[in-house]
Image (cartoon, rainbow, N blue to C red; front, top):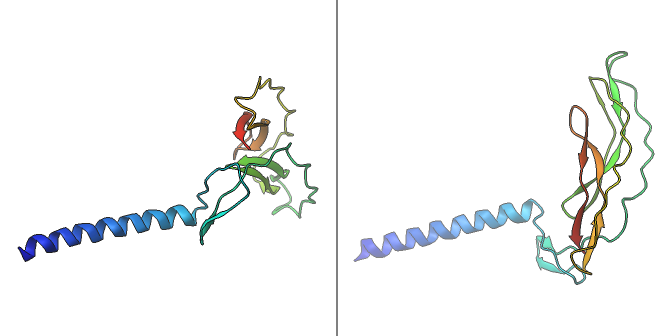
Length: 142
């Protein structure tokens, strides 16, 4: 009988460790839950966030530092990208390839919002490693 109880305890302990590991990964990667109320701590290591309402912020003026070498390098200018629940500034950086200017914004027609609680996040260009990539606009809950 002791062997069966011991096996059950080991399985329970293993399941508990697996759950603890999964929660640790979720909290350490910034896992967030969306809500319509003010930010409220869920546990001591994470918080609940609201989506910001409003347009993409104005560009940040950056002065490129000296190129790594005199030739063959191009500057990718800094730009805003929408990641998860807010706008993030992607700093400008040097790449060892030709960089075309950022294309003009695409005129998107989002249509009506799915609900009064949604806000439109307009599409934007982001640097995709070897060229500019269009990130389509999307509706998100406030």
